[in-house]
Length: 495
Image 1 (tube, one colour):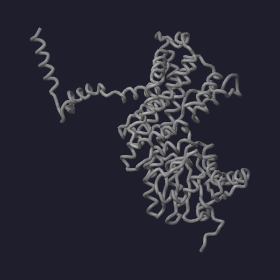
Image 2 (cartoon, helix red, strand yellow):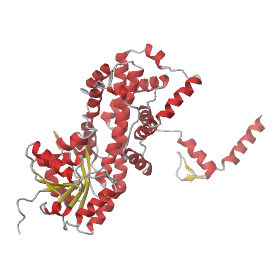
Image 3 (cartoon, one colour):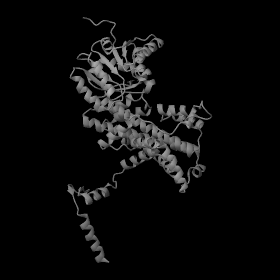
Image 4 (cartoon, helix red, strand yellow):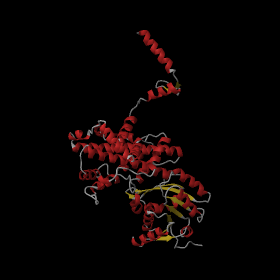
């Protein structure tokens, strides 16, 4: 029998704000959508919003069966619920009513191995599965997010037309692409979030130096960030930072930013990124530094106590004396350059992590295309991503962004300013762990010879781990103690 024209093209289960907004976005693009939530009031709320926001083709359902049967075959159902067991519970409730060839799309921030497990589990029922990263927050979900779907290519093909309309649009296409097999979509979203941690940390350090060493007011900071947003740093995070500095506190005098407790929350994707980097032996020090800073920010009482104890021990603030000799205009320009160079290193680390995972899993990720879909809709969207896209188009096997000829030239041009800012911050006792980590990464990566030879000698001495030589092939082991004693005896004889 022909499917009735009243059937919806797609379904969405899980109507917290992200789910509601994504469903309304789909409906607004002209695709009839069925929605479901265990708490029925959320269904009513979403249906009401669809009416209020333009009589959109969105239809509420109150049971899993009724919801699933309202969707045209092969059915595609997006679920947007909390990661972990709620996803498994939702899959269980819906899959009972689904048929072979139907597809489930998880749009949450899920650990990639959970997605790979679910791909296997639902395939036993003949169902297809996608783990899809969604970035852009509540506003992105409503007006155009960046979408990172991975898993079944057939499942992607079934809804490609919808995703391409719903995603953010940039000059070279919609901000969505098929990422790859398995949990690749979730993994790419996880690394996107790790890069986001790094970006936010670096911006906060730029703010710290400008405010405390440069003595800049919130009004001046708002102007500086607005100006930066018209140049090479143009991005969503720089733009919102400028806006934040302009907001007055409506509960007391002054600016709201100065009244916010300096403790940063987190959901876990940054931690996963650093753990994966360690598992794959990929250096990601800028992202790791940003995570460490979030941990340290949580120790508010300990930090207040430490400030007192060290002051009593005689530690003097150096900021005041340094600030006197500062030329504001030069400091602002130096900080801009330091922020940009540090950011290149942070993105290089994220891309290298993606490459290592892609090789391990055989995902065959397209790094230029990842940079392209991050140009719009997502939290790290930035003009600079177009340059990353072009770097990978020039050389798909690029070892690191640091050695792309264009980025290399920019790093070299900015390194003097970068070193001045880090040096100044260190002298002033202001921590810039992200900028320091990026600079150390750059300085380590660009050196043809490192002091690792000494570390390897130590390992060979105490653990017989052997070493390689620079002048001949093979593995070598030395009885270091005996050789040292011989050398000492020789020295003694000479004396």
